[in-house]
Amino acid sequence: MAQTAENIEVLICTGTGGIASGSLKVADAFEAEFEKHGLAAKLGKRCDVKKTGCRGLCANDVLVDIILPGQEAVTYDFVTPELVPQIVEEHMLGNEPVPKKVAGPYYEKFLEKQQRIIFSRCGTIDAESIEDFIANKGFTGIKKAVTMAPDDVIEEVKKSGLRGRGGGGFPTGVKWSFCKATPGEEKYLICNADEGDPGAFMDRSILEGDPYGVIEGMMIAAYAIGCTFGYVYCRAEYPLAIKRLQQAIDTCYEKGILGENCMDLGFKFDMKIKAGAGAFVCGEETALMASIEGERGMSRPRPPFPAVRGLWRKPTNINNVETFANVSYIFYNGADWYSSVGTEGTKGTKIFALTGKVKHTGLVEVPAGTTMKEVIYDVCGGILNNRKFKAVQAGGPSGGCLPADALDAEVDYDSLIKAGAMMGSGGLVVMDETTCMVDIARFFLNFTRVESCGKCIPCRIGLKIMLEILERICSGEGQEGDIELLQDMAYDIKKSSLCGLGQTAPNPVLSTIRYFRHEYEAHIKEKECPSHSCKPLLHFRVVEDKCKKCGICPKVCPVDCIQWEKGQVAVIDRDKCTECTSCYDACRFMAIE
Image 1: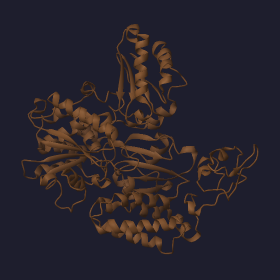
Image 2: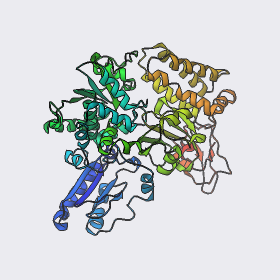
Image 3: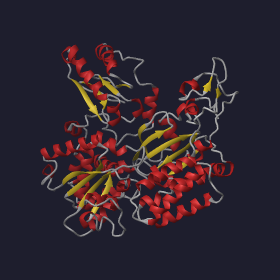
Image 4: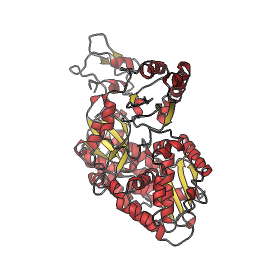
């Protein structure tokens, strides 16, 4: 990462992932070493330890950048407190980076195809410092916006081509214009930070790493639509995000950035955080508003849409965290600059959370139009243990599973929908040859069934029946006609459900049937799971010509049912075998069937 500094800087990832890996102890260790060596006096430079937001390569935390005056940053990964003295003595005092501890070429490759716009401050500034934010263009966007008429601000957002990053992809400027055009002196602005997709943590990381950027984006939106009060609806399971955002809000009030006369710019805007209880359905805007109002989070019929009658029956505009974070950059650099990035139908960049069977899990920000193959193989290093890629679940539990044939699909709204998935909020779950697609459909459908508010019958009853069918198939009790029944029910539920949860919940089932129908048929007709994942259909054995006689499988077997001697092929005692799949998962040579 090409950064230089006048003073000595140590940038340490203190997002949730970094803290879980021990980054706060690493920060304390650097402070202790600086004091021990009298580093500032010895080098004649100020030594700053900056606790930044998420750096993206979460699998390699703790990530640390060492920036010496006039030099580019050197990145270390897997840093522990025990490694700190060596870094200080050899690198910071001796000016020789510790070669075996520096992040390898994969880190440069991880960044090579990314275009970090929304994440440009995450990982480079102190997440809790308003001074750092202001030194990096902070609040210049709102200062520019207020020199324009509100209608011109909306036109600038329309011109940029920004589409909502919460999943639906509705044009942001158009959405703002609806709310502004609705009569009424009292209007509300809501930032949806409920982010409930399994494996998705983009919004959380933005709030943790650049909370002031979200505040600025909301201020611009409030000025444009004529709104004086805003909520950030954030799930309570994000304590660090809530803490840093609340600190940022409090600081903005102290400095006159929020309140009666924001930054002396002549408009009023107040905001507060509403912590949600973690219901997935509250990511749907009408259920979210019900939750803010103190009611149970349940969807409401539309129309009327929130822009006409929303929170407290007043005109309301709702966008998610990533959308508001984009707004600031449109006004820093102009709509033409923003629209030059991405594709014709999807402008700008998109942040994705990569999880599952991929080598480098974490967060990536790429221009819209980058192919799925580039994201998985070029940015994230490919499939774990060099196994074969099988599918990627795009768009969270409401998205679809795309096979290897669809790897060339571009990551933009239109291309993914055409391929049978959706961009959603940006979660990508990567699967390899050991993943059963019927079981994956069952897993995601179970999630949406549990999270359904139960208000409408198609979602409440229909998803339950679909799940029962999938569970029968996975247990070897599938029947002829089950696939057709699943498809019929899926289309009916999509057409008749009240809100987006029910309307999209069948997507994983439909996409897996579309691309992996042969796996459903194998479960039903042959009572076999081709991926060897469904336990009721498993029978374990070691394939002699594939076995490398390495002895890994007996080490991981929890019931000692694998007999092995050095130089010999392993043998599984089927009477003792509990079919736990530990040996199958551990074998890199696919020698266990």
